[in-house]
Amino acid sequence: LKLRGRVRFTIAKDFFKNVNAFDGTSKQYLVTLFADLLQDPEAEVRACAGKEIIPLLNYIDAGSFADIILPVVNELVMVDTQSAVRQTLADVCIHPDVIAKVTEQDGVKKLLLPIWEEFLKGSCSVKPEISSLPEVRYKVLRGLGAISSVLGPEFIVSTWSGLLREIFANSKARPPIGAVSENGDDIEHPQWRLREAIVYSLDDLAKAGLEADEFIVDIWRMALGDEVSQVRIAAANLLGDLCCSKSNVGLNKVVEKFIPVLLEFYQNAQQPGSANYLHRIVFLQAAFRLSAYQDAWLLVKQGYERAFGDKVPNIRLKACTLLNEMNNEVREDLIPKLVQLAHDNDPDVSRVASQLLK
Image (tube, rainbow, N blue to C red; front, side, top):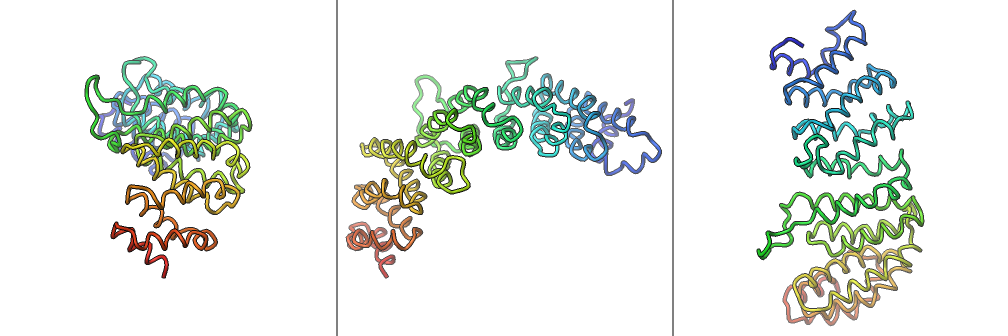
């Protein structure tokens, strides 16, 4: 396009809102024009054109999309180092409508798989020294459910489990050599969201059956002791979700494979130290989510009761607070513990326990 950059930007920004202005113009020409905008020398134009790919799907058949547009997208993913462009393309490539359009051609593995893998690997092929932004990897990881629905969870576990483990491990904050990290729970470290996204994908990946068990339990175990509270709580909350009837894991497997890990985790958390105090909080959250399932609750009940006598007031307070949200049967069974805590030395603990007894 031999137009000024601002003009090209304006055309790209509202390309399909203004498509009626192209009355009488062949769709083939429009697609070619759009492909040129995707390859524009200005990153701002490329990013705007990328956002118009979803509306494009209404004007293009699956074959043309696969033959004309996706090769351009694939090339950009491999060579374009601009943040705005890469983030836009990541959104596009995991969009359900794009996946559906490519699925019509039975071309997901050939056309989209290389793009997803390039983003997950975290570097640009042409300039490997330039790391992908965490936000780009995050978008793909959040789309693992949709990706597994077309590639199959067995494929994800067998092909990507090593990569996902690597992302999980390498996304943790590492202070400089010799430095002491005063805040291991650094919520500003952006890559913690990568680990959270992987945790949230575990139920979808469980569809792979026995092949996925070791991977899922290992990731969940690491998430329980994560340096960031949001990841720890995501792992704790996930346990309840895995018990429900709609889960691909199910109550029996949680009882057999996950709860032994949780109990070992809680036992190790009895040692002094701030990290162990936080781990006891995680156990209480996980036990709370299990309280709706009797077979699971009976296995963690003793550990939960132990928290009412914990030396740290915040642990006792957390046990009382969560108890208020459990079902009546569980609450009534633990009334003797509340009676004891109603006379606790800590005023907040005694107040909450007394309120629950009313």
